[in-house]
Length: 268
Image 1 (cartoon, rainbow, N blue to C red):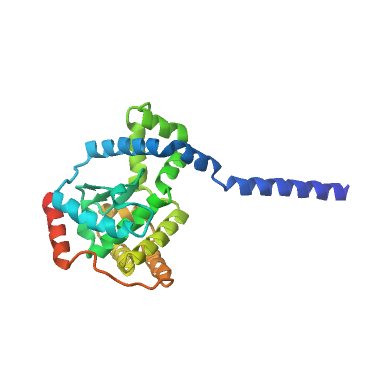
Image 2 (image 1 turned 180 degrees about the vertical axis):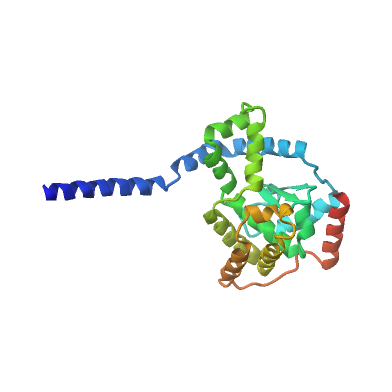
């Protein structure tokens, strides 16, 4: 009887152990992401961008666009992305924030540019958000959090009166990815920066300055709330950097950076 009980207990342990392991594999998210396809992913991005632009002030200035092209070229050269495939959208907001959207879209707020002290800091944040895009974090997270059916309803226009779109935009712009995704994005960002000739120390400096200034104007530091543990992550960035040898090249000159920031302020 005791032997039979032991065998039964062993089988139950094996069953629940296998169930637990299989539950950790995101089969649904993976296949739903593949099923979504690039066309629908772009349609999803369009729906979200339309909402953002209806409810925010966009900044469109040819000079700023030309400078952003320089940044895009530098960080995209070391990735699978063509610079032209990465679409940047600049919004007028005092919030210190940037976030990725589906289909290689990235939103940058003017408050982030004002907070950055060097062009390399801005390049570091862009590299981090590009890493989220490269690893498909945004779309896969939306499918996981909202469900594949809801995402498809957003694309088709059958979601409930724009409320779902509003919640989706809020999710990607003001709530954190899980810790493993943030670590993966940081590590990939370091690789992008090093291969682009940009010292990741600037990204670490950005993190540290955010952590120091958070109590004084936390309400504007959206990037802190969506990217927690900034001091710890500054240390992690430098730890990742130890694996690489860096040949640093200037992104843009100090004068160009000064002109760029001043133009953003005037346009804000």
